[in-house]
Image (tube, rainbow, N blue to C red; front, side):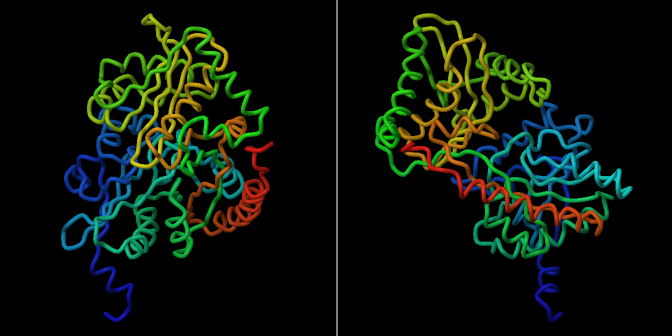
Length: 390
């Protein structure tokens, strides 16, 4: 054996697993560190499976990839065989229509390396400390073609990896796609007023008025996390969650009450629930369900149980920013979509995905499309006028 490829093939073995429990709780936990985002915790991914949110009948079949060296798990990538494109937030419906209508190629099933229903950036390959990640990324990229071939899958898609992983995927032959989200960054603000000082006077006063609205209506915001959060709050969280997803034709109840009950019991210290309540009373008016990482806050779900002006901005944006400043977090990612976030201090940020397509004709067509799409996305981000002093 003379080539580096041969050495890698001897040193590492890639196996597939039908559940997080089959992958193994203890071996998986050994791959995590303090910086690992909460949505990659074993408790989160296992809860999705055990409560029936991620099951084949809903288009999700767990097929987690484990990389082994001398029989020990040294790398893992949560992955799923998909029978549709729902709950991914990197939209490829047009790709599926083109493949099937123009090329006669079945697009589903496909493989995704992602966290279900979670459009948040985080590592898609978790690596045991001391193992060279670059080497395992090469192993993973090489393995994807084989997994697709053996499973008769059209493609493999890595969704919302960090930029360094996305660049490695491209080096190993995958196609790069760019998207846009709106993120808030903390350069070291001492207070919310310190943050507001960065805005022009008109916008600063507008945000202050929007924040005062809740106080004037006798509404208080409370943060539930760690010891103040438990499974007894599952009903409230699920109620405001479905209030939003049921409001829109495209809404989907991806999660159920049992999921919220399980994660509030198993990982409350990494959950961050904002509750809007009538002051002096017990009536909940709405809330936001966030995930709390070591250096970032991740907004996931929100809902209103009553119509209150500016409730959304306060619960989803301003309280999250205030908490990020108080906790000295580096940033706040409030979720997908929303140009309106720019006026609240969030900035357009490039997100990444990587794609392997087995059919050469489909790959070539999508590659041409992605060149133009990446240029448009990058120009949109680079040309966005800073909002703070407008």
